[in-house]
Length: 164
Image 1 (tube, rainbow, N blue to C red):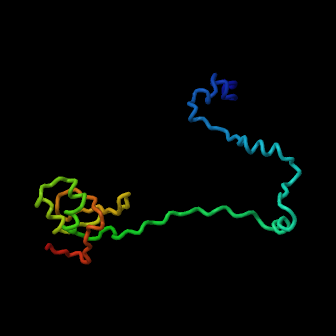
Image 2 (cartoon, rainbow, N blue to C red):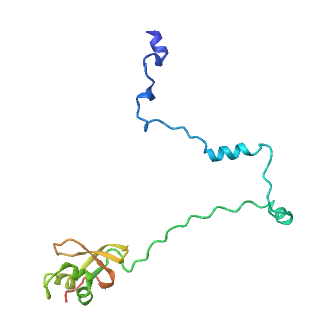
Image 3 (cartoon, one colour):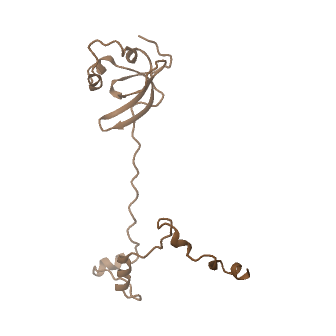
C-alpha cells in the first residue's frame, strides 16, 4: 500500500494529458521564427549602428526612439434627440416617405392617425446606413414600437402633450 501512496504515477497507466482533448491542453509559447532568426544573425556583443552619417547620427544618439502612435478612440455619435423625448410624427413628411409607401396602405388610410395625434416616446436612437432613426413607442396605444427617421419627428417640449 505504501508503494501506491508514495507515487501517484503508479496508479495511472496513461498520462492524464493523453486522454484530454487537444483544445484543453496548455500550449507552450514558442518564440516566433522571425525573431529567432534575427537574434541568431546578430552577434550578441555588438549594438546596431545607425546607417546615416555624421551630424544626424550625433544628434540622434541622446534621443529615444519615436513613441508608438496613440490609439484612436471612436467618437460618440451626436444624436438630434435623446431617449425619453416625447414626439409625434409630421403627417406630410410621413405620407411622402418611403416608409409609408412601402407598407402599401390605401390612400386616406385612417388606421395610422394615432402616430400623428398621440404622443410617442423615444426608446432608442441609432444611426444606420440610411440615416438617423428613432425607436418610437406610443403611450397608451397597444402597438409595437416602430423605427422612424428622426427628420419626420416633431419634438414636444412638455410632457403633458395634448392631442390635436
